[in-house]
Image (cartoon, rainbow over all chains, first blue to last red):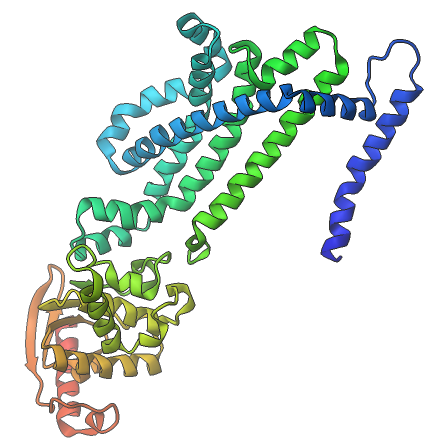
Length: 252
Length: 177
């Protein structure tokens, strides 16, 4: 199968569903519960032009990025430390195992009590939910490193900081990257959830207010916008990784 | 300064050949001096052509030469080589043996070379030390009567070579008994 044909086939099912949806929506009688894709497209365009949707998307995106940066700053050093220091691992493992299964959403009421309905609530909950994969990936990146790498570090008499920067971190980098990507997708998802209940702003809040106002086509429009934002953000991340770390394709 | 047998795990795959050689000395020297040290080390093992490649692109023999170059860049007084040619094919091995003798002659570095191959020990060594285990201890020592310049074909036909080889094998079997 040629790549082009394959691409066309991938679009067949979504296109067919859209057409079926449009037909079903126009065929229904009485007050419309199910808006047609055309109506949704119009609403999407309107909210885009009015500037409401872009502003909401920007808020959600900014919150997700801010949370992600905090996750990187906490998760990578903590995970790497856990991977290299047996004593730290023993001291913290029970604590981590107790906290980790706690659903992040369950933390929202507590965060609201402390921070109110605010961006602090959103960031706190998002970070709490999204930092785990980074900690675990960074830790296993260190643990799975070939022992020979450490012998090379000691036989070359590398200083600690130099070894950490030039040998150990790059050696664990692939694993850390996997964790960072997972954490990024989680950040997007959880910020939307937190906006729906904990911080009246952004796409999550837009979605809830559209639903509360019984504006079906606007609800769908926000839903699409969230989906598109997720896809675009993940593509942008893949692109950035590819161009920032070209050496990653080498070896292993 | 140690050269390991498993060159694949000892090299940094995300660094080029130059970057790998630089690893041990980049904190101490920089700029043109660093370049000179790297060039000199690469020249000693004949890897100048591959300087910009990544290790994954190199053959096993070249990767091991790279590891040797990285060690040489530190200008060590003693080089400990732990079965460095054990994983290489016979042809590459012979070539690297000659190169190693040459490097030793030009740098004056003391090389402690660990091998299980009696022929390799006799051919390379100025002194051959036979170890017995365990616990590891020196069982006996043999001083080489071979000339300093060695050749894969003619040296191995010399009576001194054959004698040393015979002697060593006999002691080895004696130690095993």
